[in-house]
Length: 436
Image 1 (cartoon, rainbow, N blue to C red):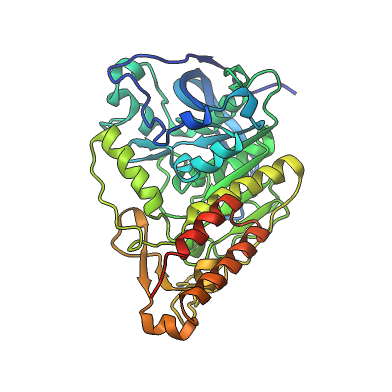
Image 2 (cartoon, rainbow, N blue to C red; image 1 turned 45 degrees about the vertical axis):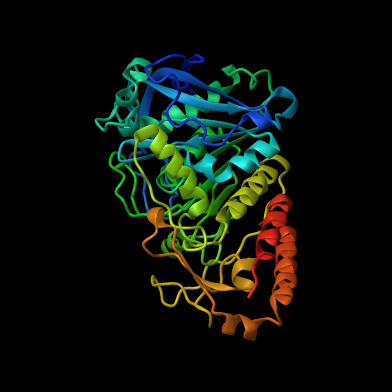
């Protein structure tokens, strides 16, 4: 059979430019962990993917696809955060950089930096959207720093699937990742990027079989029409016969829209009950990055005013669970979806106003507040409505009773694999400061 794959080349590390640094450089200090951040350019030719002639493309995602059209030249960038050789775990996570209104963000890394750095996991961010690379927006790469990025071009965002495959095959050319050092290769995306990755899982991975696993956070979060991906249905699920592990971590808004997702041997759904799309942990990092990179000022809600469920703990645990699944064939737990009050409707709520069903966790099982996934807080970071002291007094025999019950629930969550031990200590310490 003829090899229809296109091949790419890497150049770098990239230096210089008017600003002297990459766009979306790490907002987290990498130096205590010995990581280095470098940028490379990836160039070649790529083709679009589309359904095979005469095949069905339904909502179930069980699509048969192929490359179509003539190869088109492209040049994009890879942003690499690589651990020192003695700390590299052998796992690489390739993030489909999120693009929104022509601006790129490393959202997955911002959620999970501490987990990746502690575990010695290498991170590669790939710019895959025309709009974010050489689109007309003022903060597309070519407009943000023409001296550094002026040669970059992706003529059509639908080329992103082929470019992602090429980037994955070229990782051995990056310093620190060659000579068979990469043992586990994962792809990750959040919200709009997760939606793009679902196309890759459904249409491309069955053919390419490059990645060992996929992490999709807040897949189906929004119904924004994907501008240049008309070849595949917009309304889709992840195919139930996926050939590689797929872990979907959906907060409440995305979980509501994921009702009906078929189960599958290689699929796991984690839907933390009551969690909002973001929280102040993520939005505070985003605010610093936005002001630095674009001059935009973002005002975040206080941490205890926005939804205070620390979803970053679940995300970090999900990453480690996916690594074990892909590397060691040890599948993580699958959890029931959140309960809905009616088909296609809002979540069902318990007597305290918190979501029922889904992945249970200490913040809703040992509650001190009602957690909302909607509200005025920026970035969809929801709201927290603390219980009055009168209700807390009915629920618990004083603060110490609450502290003990919460600690027990956290340790159970560690055993269930949904909170990592390092984060469990922080969660128990934070709860221990609550009194009334």
